[in-house]
Length: 461
Image (cartoon, rainbow, N blue to C red; front, side):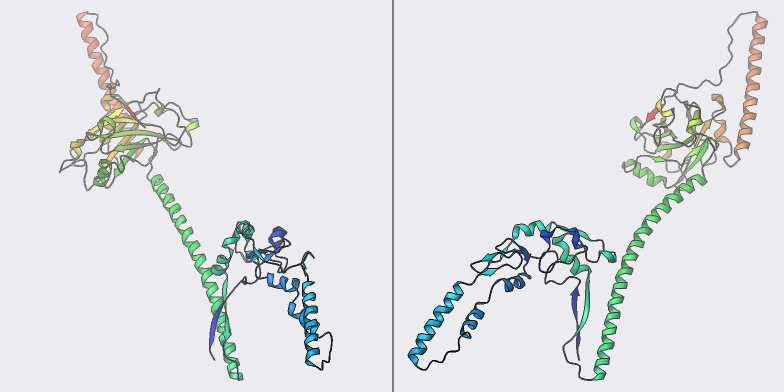
């Protein structure tokens, strides 16, 4: 006994389309014979529409069979003809009578009771078919979580692709009980295979959904890790030591303009203070492009901005560390312009960057034995001066050991500032003493130590 698999779809190709909730559609789209959505619509002479495959049932009842009319007429009279002449005359009369009866036959539509004198012709209703192709229908398996809702013209393909099952058909008769048992076992196996196939398809769909969700979660996790890493090393004392890795690759990106600038991790003036970051152009920016390294300061919108003092007016110092141990650090600073939008309370994510376009000549960091780049790593320090230190103390803070706690560094700064003021006071005292001994009236020549040089400070969008 041999078995084979035959495909069976949810909707048979005979009759109309089975859809979910037929009551949602207008009556003109429903076949009066099969009570389904019309498939391949045809139109009767009376105007009624039906499926092309259903029309044979309707016309078989509309059109009376002419052969039946002749047969009924032949059986009407039981005549005994004894002569050929009489038989011939009788046959002629019979034919004439039959033709007259056929000519009097009429056809009647059982849907609307309209009568026709001639046999009805079925017309392909192409205009109505175009209208039906655009009719949106719900899949018959809607209650089984199939959410297909599209035009009717795509429905059969959906059924063939998504709702095809298989049944076992036998091409031989079962002649014994053993064969019946074998057939039953095979049918059970085939049913089990069908269930497994459906389960596998469901699992594959779930796996695809999980993989997609995993990708989204992985991206979110990467973003969270990046935020955690930035917060883990974030400073909250107004200083930032920025460790820049892969400098040569970043320099190449800046030269080719793939990525002209990079941002430092954010840092804070205090736990509830200003949020800031640095922006570095390794190959220069604006007029300094290809000649200098440009370094800028950026204010970021923070959680405590509404209680802080604005505009931001604290001096900012940049320092590029010399890693050779000779302490030839490159140091420069600038004072904020209170009128600039760069130092007002941020209204967007970040303010316009402002800083020193010509911070460092490029040849200084492009030497073979570069003291500022070691192992493809560069260190830049950013210091926000909240002590209003005199300009002459500008080099002192970067020379402090970055490994010291912030309170220790602040204490050392205060000590150095105290010593500086003592020296300044003694110098002022000696100047006044000399004036007293000579009796000359001279203007006070006290040195204004905290006057800053007239540095050029540029803004960067």
